[in-house]
Image 1 (tube, rainbow, N blue to C red):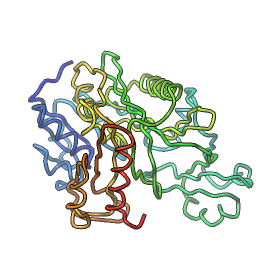
Image 2: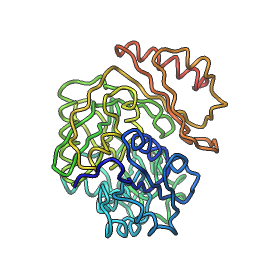
Image 3: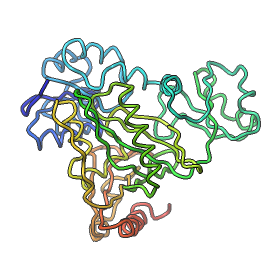
Image 4: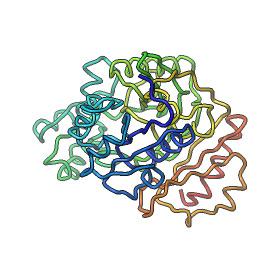
Length: 369
C-alpha cells in the first residue's frame, strides 16, 4: 500500500529521533502526529498534532500509519494501534527487543553471532559463569546508554554490584577483546527490497556513544560480513522500516552482534548531512511503500554527540569557524548529566580532514575529555 504526501505519520515516542523524522515529513509534504507522555517533548514541539496516552484512540484516528522511535513502550499500546492502522515495524519486533534476554535469545536461536552469555533469574550458579574472568553484567530491562551495565573481573567484584540486580533478571556475558565497535543501518520495504548504509565506526564514553566516523576504516571482508549480518537479520525479523545492528570487530575479522535497534539510530545521524538520502527519509520511503534505493555517501563524515551540555555551554563562535561543521540541537529544555542534547555533524573531502575537524570540535565541546 502506498501512503503519499498529505498522509499523517504517527510516531510513538517524542524524543529526538521522532523530531528528526518529523523534519523529513515536513520537507516531503507529510503531516505528523506524536504520542508521548509529554506534549512539550522534542518531537511534539514541531509536530502537526500531539497526544498523550489517555488520548490513544484520538491519535489512531488522526494517523494513516504509525512507527515508533524508541523501545520502552507498552506492547498493549502498539497492539491496539496495529488492530486499526498499519504499524511498522510490527509489535512482534518490539516484543523481541524489549528485554536484553529476549533479544539475545532470538539472536542465538536464529544462528546470529554473539558473545557467549547466560541469562539468570536469580543469583543461583552465578559464580560458575563468572569465575576469574572479565564479564559484562547487564540488567535485561530498561538499560540503554550504559545504564544497568557493569563490567567486572571476579566474583569479588560481583559482590559489590549484586544488590543492584538482586531482584531482577540479568545477563552475564563474556567480555570480548574487540578491536572496534561498528554499526550498519539497513532498510527494507514491503516488497522485500533492501538497502544498506556504509559501515560506521563508533566510540563510546561511559557507555554512551560519543562519536561515529563514516565510513569505517575496515577491510572489504568485514564490510561484506557486516552487510550480510544486517541483511539476514532484517529479513529474519520481517522488519518494514529501519534496522541498526551494532557489532564488535574481533582480531580475526569476525563480527559479533552486541545489539540491534528496529528504528533510526544515533550512529546514523551523519546521514543527514553526508548522504543524499538520510536515514529518516529512508524510513519514510520504506514504511510509505516507495522504492528504497541505495543511498550515496557524498563525502567522509563524523558525528559528535552533545551530551549534558546546552546551547549556552558551547562556544558557537569557535564551532562555526570549523569548515564542515553542522550543529543540531533537539529542543530539550532540561540539561542533565548524560543526556543527549544534540549532535554535531562534520563533513570533509577525505577521512584525514574529517578526523582533524572532529578532534578540533571535540576539544571545544569537551575540553577536559
